[in-house]
Length: 242
Image 1 (cartoon, rainbow, N blue to C red):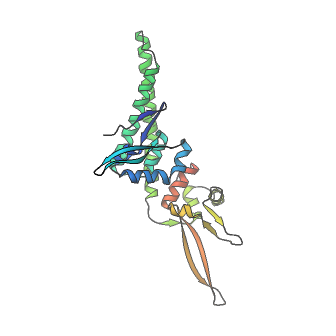
Image 2 (tube, one colour):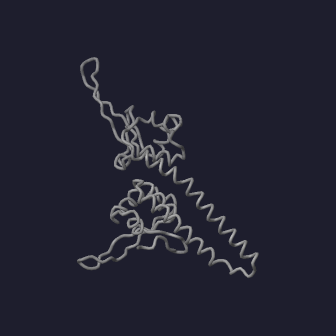
Image 3 (cartoon, rainbow, N blue to C red):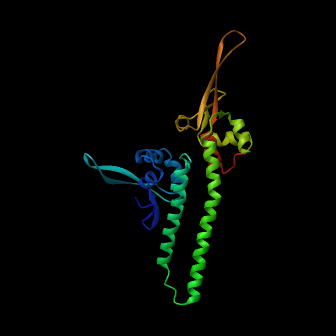
């Protein structure tokens, strides 16, 4: 099996290969996911890509491999369906990152010369492990809740989405415009979704045709938020879905 975590430039990283193998996904699918959400991932540092050889029936080929730090790999896993195998891999990856950092910490320390020094070192390591496990316990329910929302069927208008997020509608509309999710065409009164947010599955449009009093037809275009979009907004704004 591919090593889960290794050091790259002194920093602990995993690879798209390890994630693909650990979650039983095709590597091409994982790389596509990384490319799709690269902007999100790079909020936690630059994503490094390397070209690595691999053997096929037709000979040696080259493929792109992404190197992800702990925060980036945790985030990319939240964008996957939260199956049993993905949950199991999440826990294994968290432990692998902790174990590697523990080994790196030990390498920086001098070997304790006395029993009290050894006890202090053991206490420090135990505290670090307890902290890592506590962080995992906090993050897991949030990740599962976001996963349920992201995979839910149906859409809602931004006003209903604001109520679900427990924020004022104006605050949500302002955020959507500021972050380039929606805009208004010159001279128009309705909101329009940016194409990249539609392609990402965050927003969609509802087109309704109504008849005016004079018998002519008017087309009304309404922006709707998907379950995946609601989960993304909740995570980006740092608010809970209620």
